[in-house]
Image (cartoon, rainbow, N blue to C red):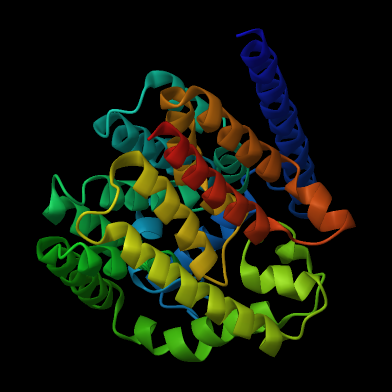
Length: 359
């Protein structure tokens, strides 16, 4: 019992220090942004807002960062002045994730820890989309069995950042959840059609020649580049170790295939369900895509906080590792390499170990 008390102190010390490192990083990013632009509003939200305003005024849409359905999210917040729009963006994204976690009956302590987690703080500081996408991912995975139509609609909404929806069809097909699969496909179709009708079909004409090629150019950029320091994928792990873009792409393809197979096994009838499956799937989602950042992990932070509340020893260890990895990550990436995919794989293995230990 005494040993467990020491272990708790060590874990929570790691969590606190990781949060302080994250706050220092966030303050540095905000200060640098303010010094360069003179704008106190987070840089990523400013970019989303400028793209939305350009589309609304029929200016160049060559720099749309995400597929046109993303405009259905960003345009309403762009109708206000930058600062009120940013505040509304953060407030709405936080509320959406809190509502999902509460609806899935997460403990209050887990919700609070999720709100102060490193990825959530990054989203707030940068004005990023991670909270909205995390809410959709968590809802789609958490309600897949109980409310398949709602889960499918939530999965369809991930089209705003489609790289995080790659495994969701696998989940639904493996579970033979035809309702969720059909709802997701219908939602994607409706959002794509709606964005074309509202903003004009021209917005779709720039997706492949500009958005896709732009993403490819970002991934092909030589290491290190400024935007790469919080990337957590297998592709960027390989690039940071000196691999060429082609070699990194081959390893990423292998990781994707392994993630698909693991996801299929997780979600097939008779497999383990509940929080274990959600946590493991969120890890696989990040391993499957070549393009993901620390700020795309709030859903995993919320789930691991709930996991720690339910499983005292193993859960707390997994949570502390996650906090350490996300909080200290800028130090790893600045002075060493990008080990994000390694940490996510370790978390996946620890989840498996904790599950076996409790059975």
